[in-house]
Image (cartoon, rainbow, N blue to C red; front, side):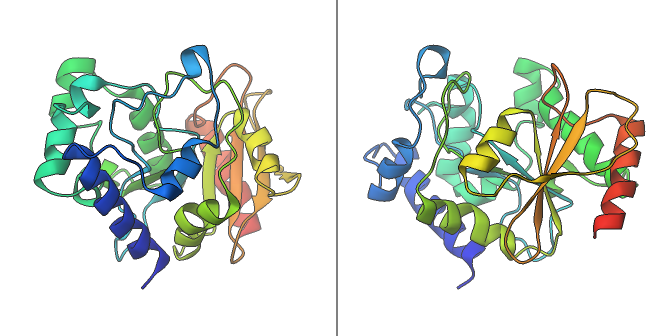
Length: 252
């Protein structure tokens, strides 16, 4: 069985148990839970559904954009709590089916929270990167370094090496994509702590002077591209995305 299918089956089983009221964590998830000790706004909220990934993890086609995140962000009990809208959907289907349906950009979310700028900015980035405005939200894959929610991240996240490989690096290595993306300066420290090395700066003709892109080697000649900008933790806009795409073509 492929690493991606194995990961999807694991999460379908374990999150399936959670949404049906069994909140006792699998021993591997207990170890993962202990990999982060945030306090205050960074305290982990275990009353909402874990979200290890969003997108087509086990699809036959390679996603248009593969991204790493630190964690799934602030809890939204109306959607992720035991009686939440998304929790009910997972209960009726499976975590994998829900995750590949394009949640957080659907009508239910936007009626409550408005347009999701986090996901929209990444969708716009994917379309600009590939010069393809037809890419849908369902073709973006987000994989989290830590699958549990918190309002912010206030401490280092250091998942056990075997879990990092099993649920993140090995599944990613099966995808036919040379570049994996992460956004924001916290990822520079995270990449080093995860053993990816110091990385090297990608020469890009940026229009935003404070923007940088550091490249870290992963498995199977894949590379993690960490894009940062002073005071901003999202993807670049149109002109800088074009410049980044040109620089990556040289690297590919």
